[in-house]
Amino acid sequence: MSYLKLKEIKEFTVNNFEKKYWSFYDETKTGADAFLKSDDYVEGYSPKYTFNVNTGDMLDVSQAQLGQMLVGVFEAKKTLNGAKFLVKTNNKEGKEIRYYINYNWKGSSSVDITANNAVIADKQATEGDNSEVSPDVIPF
Image (cartoon, rainbow, N blue to C red; front, side, top):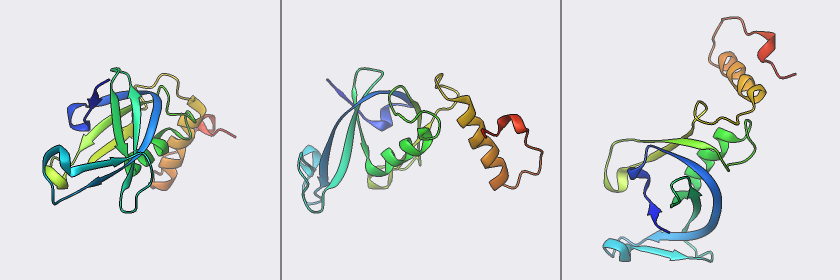
């Protein structure tokens, strides 16, 4: 199987989780030799998570990116399998580039409508939206 890079895609759907590994970027080396990997924990290495995605490829994400994915789907689906995500970037290059992964509410057909409406109602309340919230969108 081949591996996708986040910079190559704008959207993906998770099929399933494959594995966790540890990686380290060695600034004293160049190219592919600079990226060190281990299946076991090594001090100073960062955890990475590999997912099989809808293109049939593998996609590695960092712990922070996985956190973004989990927060996006936790209330709605309780699983990452089948969830669709949008990929955004800060438009920088090299070590300064950052990728942001957001749950695609519109693109995921199996979203629990009750949970989705609760998030919308909560967002309106926390952002100071003074418009009236319909009781129909409150899940209790």
